[in-house]
Each structure stands twice: as C-alpha cells, then as structure tokens.
Length: 190
Image 1 (tube, rainbow, N blue to C red):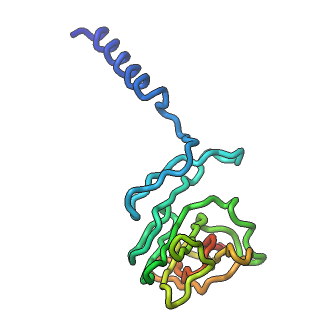
Image 2: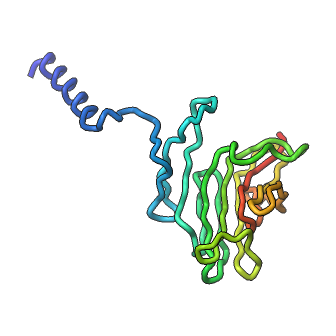
Image 3: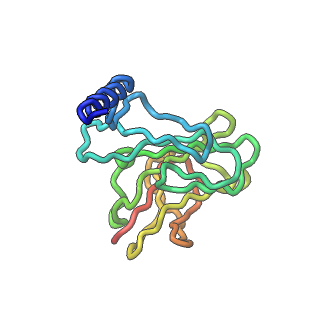
C-alpha cells in the first residue's frame, strides 16, 4: 500500500470517528446537569458550565448517592468524608460546589484554601439541620497546606452564618467534626 493511500485512509478513519461521535469530539462541556455515580467511592466528573465566570478551568461538580454505612468517601477529590457511625435511618448526601455557593470568609480568617464540600444529613427522607452524637459521628478532612494557618468552617443551612469547626491536623489532613448540614471549606492564611 503506497503512502498516499495510507494517508487518505487515515484521514477518512479520523473523520469517521468524529462523525460517529456526534460531532462532540474534543468538547469540554456538558450542560445536562450532574451525573451520579453507581458506587459511593466512584464519581464521574463532568464539566462545570461556565455561567459567565472568569477563568478557563472550572472544578467539576460531583455527587455521590446518600451514604448510610461507615467508611471514607472522597468528595470530588477536594475533601474526604469519614463516616465513623450512623444510626439506622440517618444518611448523608454530599456534593462538590464552587466558591460562589458561600459568602466571603469571616473577617481576619483568611482565604479559601480548598473547594466547597456540601454535607446534608437526612433522617429517612427529611433533611435535618444537624446530627446528634447519638445519631452518628462524621468527620470531614481537607488536605493541609504547608506553611499556612488554617481551620475548617461550615456555612450552616439552618442559621446562615459561618461556624468555626475544631480543626486538627493529622497526617497532612485538616480534619474536623461534620455534624451540621451545610457547606464546609478550609480557610486560612499563607
């Protein structure tokens, strides 16, 4: 087979693949909404619609099904939710959000150092503002950033305000209890 024939066959093969893919070849955007994963620890990232925000790289939204069993669950690669215990009927829903979902950090606390991890507690099908110690024990952890002073905060759904969480750095993770339904962030100063 001569070079010219191989060249044209290659061109037609590439064009055929592009045509069969529905002309979506190389697009980095999908406006159909969030995709849910089939297992709690496996998430399917999806492009974040631009919404007129500056910058070309956007964090992908990510969700996982409600969690009702102990274990460690990654939320979009930004934070880890560690479920130590949950009583029967209590479950947790999580989602990765962008910074526009919360107001600016509290004065003198610093800047956002990681994405926003949403945590919602349920009793049956009903959203509850928080879990008690009897209902469960849940921690949230963000990667610690060297040479920074940082703390975990939650923007509460019930009382829309920032709450400083008792934060402990363990093995490179900034961890705190996650017992309030709301948006959790790592805030600090470099």
